[in-house]
Image (cartoon, rainbow, N blue to C red):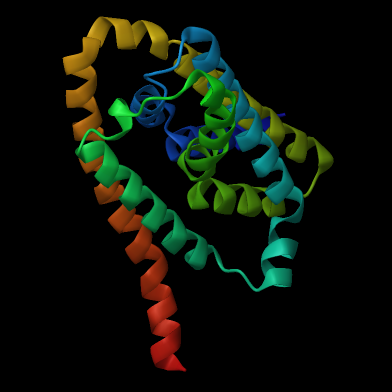
Length: 211
């Protein structure tokens, strides 16, 4: 029993830190600013569901898929870094907050942003995917695998509750507060993007130079 509790705490803390729902919330807020409460909540639910399914798929077949397609986690980090950087640049210039979504395009917009960039790579990024593959390999017993899935589910439940509360936070902050927060988070995301890019590019460069 102690082994299961220890492993469960490890899984929960690592995924909560990597996914960082508090950090995801400002991005979600700015990207869904022009949506009403119903569509904003639908976006959150779709993003969480997509993220959960993605992690489960990689948990059971991640290593196989990476080996089959010749994809490295470092390459995934580089691509994630580029996506983050472009998104952060838009946020820094307050572009995301000024996007107007036509009524007939709301359904498509919700589906698009709930998958990319919210679900992938914001919520389920290279770190989360790498983490789930490593932990799944460590979880040799079926019980430990269930503990891992339970921890992931708990983290996503907390993340969803935080995103669903974004509507109230948007009202409290107002337009000026949202723009200030968006620019601040845009700057932070660009810094994270550079770290993502370099952490993936350095190993690739070393391999190229070594070869």
